Every structure is written in C-alpha cells, then in structure tokens.
Length: 52
Length: 317
Image 1 (cartoon, rainbow over the protein chains, first blue to last red):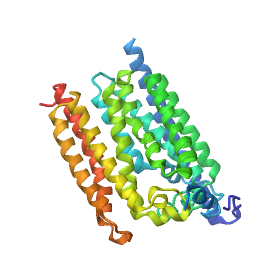
Image 2 (image 1 turned 120 degrees about the horizontal axis):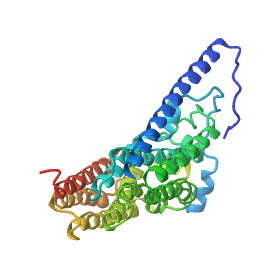
Image 3 (image 1 turned 90 degrees about the vertical axis):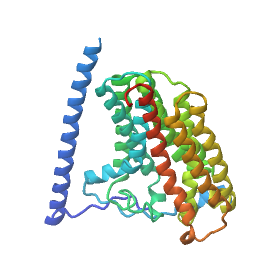
C-alpha cells in the first residue's frame, strides 16, 4: 500500500489551476451546506417553539 | 481455504494509487457516502416514519430522514476509509476515491467521523434521543462491528452485519413515536433476513473478486453448494417474516397479499438458485435475477406497507 502523498509541482500552472478550481468548488458546496444548516436550525427552532 | 488464511491473505492484497495531494473534489466526498446504498436507507427510513401511527411535523420528519441519510453517509465513509486497500483489489470498487488516489485517507476518516457525529447530534436535539441513540448504534455497528470485525473474520459477516442496514425503518418509526413496538421490530427482521440471500446471490457471481481480496464471503469459505442451500432457507424464513405483520393483525390486506405473493416469487427464484450447480459467473442468470429481484422486492414491500397504513388511517381511499 502506498499511503505517502505525492507533493505536486505548484509551479506548474495546470496543477495550480486544478487546485484552485477544486478549492473553489469545495468552498461553494461547503457554503451551501452551511446555509442549508442555518435554515434548517432556524426552522427547527420555530417548530419547537410552536410546539411548546 | 479457512477464514484465518483468507484474512491473512487480505492484509496486503490491494494496491492503492498514490494519493493526489491536490485537495479532493467535493464529488469524491459525495461518492464516499455511497449514494446508491443511501437511497435504499432513506427509502426504508421514510417508510418506517410514514408507517408509524403518529404525527410528526414535516420539518422534524425531514430532519429525521436527513440525519439518517447523513449517518448512513458517515458510516459509509468510515467503511471506505478502513477498506481502502481491499477496495483497491476489487474491480467493482477500485475506482472509489481512496483506492483511485483522488483523496487522502485521513480526509475520509475526518469526513466520516464529522458526518456521523453531526447526524446523531441533530437527531437528538431536533427529533428525540431514542432515535439518536439507535442511529448512533447503527453507525457504530456498521463502521466498527461489521467493517472492522465481522467482514474480514467470518463468513457470517453478512448475516450479522445485515443488522446495520435493518435499523433505518426502526429509526424512522422511533422518530415519530419515541418508542419501538412490534411492527418496527418485524421490519428490522425483514431486512435482516433479506440481506443474506440478497448479498450471497451477488457473491455467487462475484466470488472471484471477493476471493482475490480475501474477504471470507460464504461462497469463498463454505463453497457454492452450501451458499445456494442457505439462500433457499433464508428465503423460506423471509416468507414467514414478511407475512408476520399481516397474520399478527398489524397490517391489512393491502400489505398482506402483495407481501406474501412477492415472498413466494422470491422463494421460487431462490429455489432455482438453490438447485443449480453452475460455477461459471457468465452462466449465472438465475443468480443475477434473484439479486435484481431482491432489490425490487424490498422497495415494493415497503411501499405496500406504507400504502396499507395510509389506507388504515383513512388517508388513502
């Protein structure tokens, strides 16, 4: 098993572009997930207050 | 080949590709959650929730299903984190994010733990702590008891490990009722008994894959003849378990008739598999038929259960 990560060449523009694209898409998905969680917690709170 | 030899052989079978140090794509994290398996989990959990004779606010109901999905995704990620080298050795799983080298192993571990903890926490706070406790136990059962202990050590892995996949309808029911009664226990039993013939049908025509990576699946350890016999006997028990809710008066005809009819078809296909001696995977049409039917079986049987309960509640005419 090879578990040692290979350090890519960050001076290579293609690698850098790939890295930035992945970071950007991950950040967007993470942002959407967090917004969804905020909305969910808000709704849960409203429902729970309504129940009591 | 005995279990010990197979397990020892499993230690270093797969070759993981060198992990790419460039951050993994979000699609790889999504793939870690085994979305196809998750769809069955969500479906059975939703059926458990809808079949429960109680009321739940739609937001809370949605949260419960979301938590079950997140928990299933988290445990699937932990499963792939632990089995990365085994996955690398099997054609079916070699393109998963870890064996393909698209993600670092530690990322999968953190993702799995984070998702699992989040799902249990939200379930406890928003729904109830009984369903959160069952969810936590099911994650532990799948990720630790099944993946780390049973699967590499015993051909009974699928039999006992099947319990992990049987929890979702119980959690769905507990989310509504905050208690577990006879019907959800029977639903648990239904999936528990369904799992071995479902997986062993697959294992029969994927035997060489499992043997290669040293997973002691029943056909690898006990042989095909014994597996075929067991498939039949489990299918017979499945008929009894599937019919039990009807005969115990927990459901009506809307569930009872299709459940008995489908279980008889299941038994017939299992008998066909049980009587065969074919060992060439290319010639295993009845085995593939049984595997495909078993998926349809579970979907239909849970659908008619919900329909039955909705008819009983006067929601459906």
